Length: 254
Image: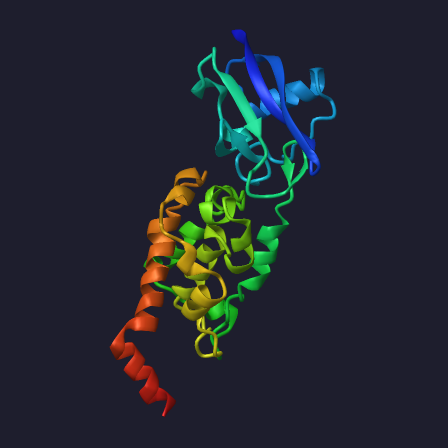
């Protein structure tokens, strides 16, 4: 096994402030950035705070920014960097720092609670649900989300404009709205819930300008923009601006 010494800059601090601290640390073949952070804890910075759990890219806990790009530390291989490159590890920029690389992502759980759950169809028991495989596949893509919140972090609507947070759910939860809206068994409309309207009025769908940055950082390869956000925007626009839909709604109300 070959090894070399790498240069790291790791952000240290808390809610009151902080800065980058320089480290020289050993790197071995096959290691990922999280391995190096653990080595720093073991040898040079025992009080370095980092959140992690599975180390297999499935829990979403070890989200941070490596050289300015939101990544999972456990899935970022050291081999993708040059040996003479200085690697910078910082906390997620869109959320408040607790300490070192650990941020308060409570914003995301608040937004999750604001999305109304699946509405079961009336008169159909759970074991009697039947769906076309095409509909299962479409929904299953979004179910791969591990809630690492990298898409939330990279979205400039959240990242660069703190004032938008109260009115904007972010790509992860707009994707959840889209998933439910296209679910063939969701009986939201029969229950008086218009998911397309709430996507615009309550979850800030109009703030999204489909730059696809959320899709680019998703570790599960979910096509958030193409398969969730753009179709949801199209359906919301149809519902709000299509004159035939408007006329049909007026007739139904009468």
